[in-house]
Length: 447
Length: 81
Image (cartoon, rainbow over all chains, first blue to last red; front, top):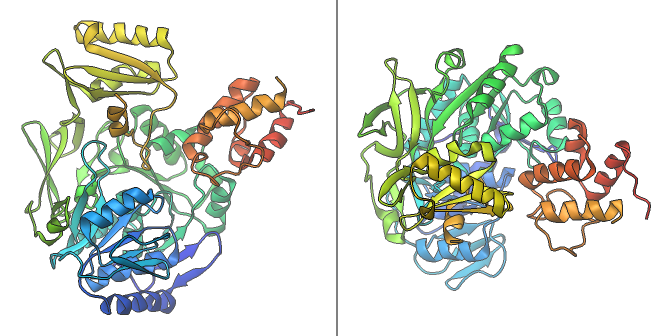
C-alpha cells in the first residue's frame, strides 16, 4: 500500500527544499530497495521532522516492513529498552554507540543476528499516548493506517490544494495522521520545526500559504494568548483540534474566530489505538452539539456498552505489543476497540464524552472520577488528580501550603468525605508528556 | 536586585534552571528546557516581574535572552549595570 499520491509535496521550511513528484518518488523507491536488502524484522525509526526520514517512513509502509515511530529526543536509556525488548532489524536515525548485537552504519544501528519475527499484517507501531501503565506499542496494520488516512481526508474535505504545516511531532499519532491524510490526497506538507510561538512559524504561514493547522488543547491556550486572528492569514481557513478535551469556552471562542472569516473549526476525537481518528464534529453542527466530539468517521461506528465508548471500524489496532514475541501476533481485537472512555450518544449519533473509565480512584472505598475532581477544581488553576492507596492525591500548580489546605477542605466538602483521605500539594509545574498532556505516571511515581 | 538579575531569575525559574545557571546566551529551543510550554511560563513570569503586558508580536519575537532584553526596553525597562 502507499500513502503517496503522485502530486504530494514535502517542503522543508528551514532550507526551502522541495520534494515532490519524481524526486519524492525516487527517494521512497531508494528506501524500498534498501529495506529489500535487509533480513526480516521491524524498523524502529527516530522520527525527526525532515524529508529523508519521511521518505523512509513511506517506504517502510510500501514495502510492508513494520516500522515503529519513536521520539527522536528519547533518552538513550529508553531507546535501549525498546531495542532490547523488541529486537528490531534496524534502528534508524540513532546516534551514539550501538548496543550489543548491533553495529553502526551511517546514522543507523543494524542488528547482527536475527531480528524478532513480525506478523505479515503488521505495518506501523506507535507508543501509547496514554498517561498510565507501562510503555507499550500499539500495533497497526498498513490497511488500518490507510483506511484512517482516507476517512480523515474525506471528513475534513482535504484536497490537493491544501498546505499543512507540521505543528505536532510525527511520532505522535495526531501529527502522523496530518501527514498521512495530506500525502494521500496529493496535498503539501510543510516541515516546520519552530512552532506557533515563534516568528518563523507565522512568516512561513504567509510564505507557504498554510491552509490548515492541527493543534492540541495547550496549543489553543497559546493561540488565545497570542490573540490569534485568522483575518491576518487569508489562506488559513481550517483549524483542527484533537489530543484531549478542549474546554468549551475555547471551543466556542475558536469556532467564532474561524466562522467570522468563513473558515472551519473541527473538534475531533481519537486514540492511537484507532490509527488514530474515530470522530469528527462537522463545523456546521458545532453550535447545536456543543460539547460533542462528533460523529463516527466514514466506515466506523460507536456503541455505548456499560457506559464505555466502544468503537468498531477498519482502523482499529491489531493489539498492543509489550515484548518481541507480541510482534508476531495477528489481530487480537477483531476491529472492536474498547476505548476506556465513558460517554453517551445522542439520537443523531453524536458522541459526548463524560470521563475516563480508568481514571477512577477510591477514597475510603468510594469511587471518585479523577477527571471530575480536576474539573471541579479548575478555579484553582492547573490541577492534576491521581489515585493512591484508597487515597486521592491532587497537585495544584503554584499553590503554597495555605492554598493547598483551602483546596483540600473544599474538595473534602464536595466529595462528602474526610479530609484525611485527600492529599493536596503544590507543584511548580505539572509534568507534561511531549503531547502536552499531563504526565500522570511521573506524578504517581513522585508519591 | 538589578533589572538584569530580575530578568535572569525569571528565565531560570521558568526554564527550571539552577539559581546560578548562566542564561545570557540562551536561545529558544537550543536546549530541552526552553520549549513552547516554558516559553508561555516565561512570558507570564516576565509580565509579573516587571508588571507589564507583552504584545503578541513581542511574544513570538522573544527568541533569545538578548532579544528579551531588547524587547523589554520598549516597555520602559532599562538594563544599566
